[in-house]
Length: 368
Image (cartoon, rainbow, N blue to C red; front, side, top):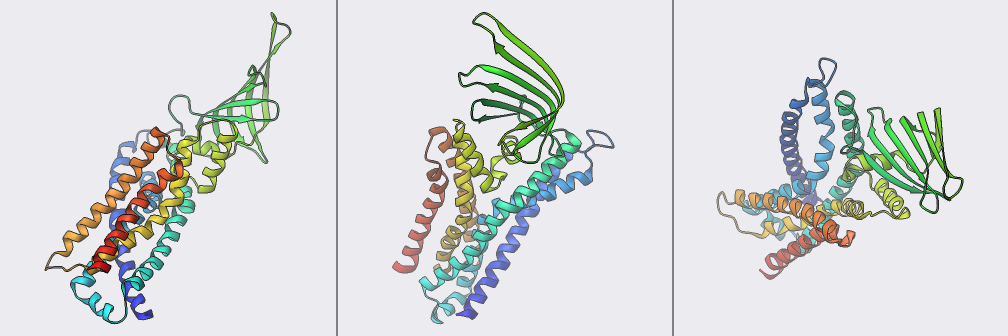
């Protein structure tokens, strides 16, 4: 069995690697062509061709994370179909490779792809994607969302705060900061504005060029406004750099633990977290789809092929992989609109394809 596993693993790894490289090269080309429109917009000191090449290269881990389940499916289908076409799989069956043993062998290989997908999506892709965004912002402008930037909310012991960060600079510096402070009655007690700020040591922000307006009521008919201009100000807060990043960048590019902490922050401050909960569960379940894909590819080893028929089945595998990717996105939007359970929204595509793959396995392998 060790020899059989070595044969199957070697063939599948080579096929998956080849398909993955092909897809990544295709995405690299399309991304590079799309980036050419930004080259030279800021003059000789702005965004250049070398920066576009570096940006596109840094986006490769994100594409790898998205493509791995699909390439695992296509590569495994190709190997299983080719072994069946050349009657090699028939020889493996007579050597003791039964259906359940073959399933266990592929599941073990799928578990390795699960670990690779998780590591890529949770560690490598967030780092390179953030670096790519900061690189682009250095030469084209700050990272921002719409016209008003990102809004965050925090409740502290006696007061509540609404925080607006207009943009994030290339060096991770916040730009255009506004902090609205409310008392327990919901009345505005202060407005703090800062041109820029950094995430200081400890749970605090270090603000620069601060203008602070403090409002107070002397009586029911009299109010008082005090204006302060400060060169620096330390503002204690639990809003971390990751929380600001997840508000300004795409949540699917963040680490799982960062998303979980941001969801807790939103819940603690009475804000809706449906979108981020769905993205969190998608990051939990998405690597497991590699197991679904290898199970879905196993029945192809028990089909009977005519000459040249393998291309049709490989094309069918490509369509199945694309349909899984599309269904995964459709369920995310539907779950957000219909307010479905986040874990169900993220797990439903994988569960549907699991049922389909096990049904195909049972009908083709066990019944026939």
